[in-house]
Image 1 (spheres, rainbow, N blue to C red):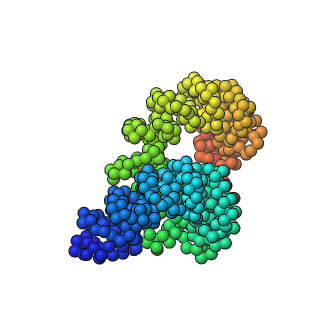
Image 2: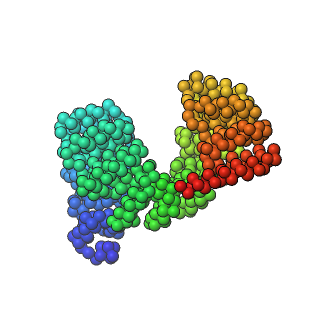
Image 3: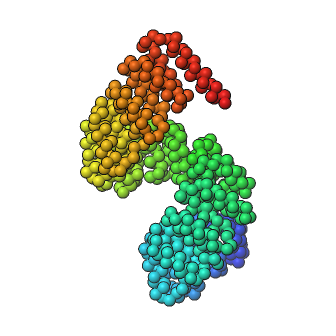
Length: 592
């Protein structure tokens, strides 16, 4: 309809119609109307030009923005209208073109605080933080005083860049000017900055001194707690905000949903989902839709995550990443790989996060051929260079698929290694039973300055256990404790007990269990029980069975081992007594 009206309307009516679309928040329709009449060289009013530039910024439409730039220049607005020029700079900044923003800025004769702030923001948007601060210093040298929006932008830069010294200086400056209490944007930026630094207590202190707290301030605090995975605190803030009569916006909901996911508060998340549906905002807000998918995935409610995904009109890479990661997390790896294929059919290009999840799914399912395809995609996109996370995912995938030579090649091509790189390779060789290679890699890791962690220790102990190298296992454990101030965890001690039991040193294994600084697990006693079956010790085997059942009445493996042990001695009558007693106790406990 807009196009038909545009072709028969006068210039004045067309200007009015576009302006009406913009005021109603229909940026897309306004730009469609503008494009259809561009060749007519219509001269819009100043406020219509500004509105169209804002629409271009919102929709990241740099092509239409460039045309508007040309028209505004011809009309001479850049020289005489500070607001129009700053909006143009802002448009280029939001479209990720700070150099174009700088070009516009350089042509201006009069540069006020609005144009300076727009340029600072343009550099900040693409994380060119040094250039943003350089602009601020030039602005100060030019004698232009910053306003609350300038400070807000710079505080956000400090938060993103962890610029502690500059951030503290800016905080002191806005405190002297008493801007924290009067500007909700500065207060919110301060809260956000401290939260990104991980100093949430300081963020709370800033929040507490703000007299009037609107949705912006509340959202900053909620987002801060959510970012640090302090979900319960974030949800308390959300409750307090609502009790004060402050209505949440889409950003508030997205941050609160993140908190719900971190603490698995599916009920609260579902209630927020219902509220969002009442408002009818989901179809127009992909960020909110993605937050819902992520929340349901982390809460383990995959059917609802899939339902939200299916109801979204469009999907971006974040939507797919949330769904694929959820499938991998809950062991639906085949489904995850199907999603990865479908995503590309729909024309959405996977990023490093998507491909890392895909590699994990390939490793879990042993889908080596698809893993190799993903590796080819990564190579084409040149994602390996400098990305240790995706390189480690490749090593892990190849190791789990038994392609150790390929895992070794990826490892060798890395300019540096972290503990995940070393552990993935060690795990692969340990599971393949290549004992010498495990210790060779371990020595290389230590020579390069790497420190073994609990995963390294588990793999080395596992390797020693299956190779019968009990002395080596104890020597390595002793060295790790002494050299790296390492405190063994339950998994490590369980591994050592299993190693002792396998080698026939059952009495030493029992002694180790009884002298542990914490309660032993049923798995430990089951290792001993399995050993008694192998070595044929009836009396101590019965004791191990009783201890296993005391700790875990559902440990079916213990029953099987005990059956095998009794079968060895043909003492079926006593076996029946013990097994029936076990079943009776278990069923009674479950009824309670």
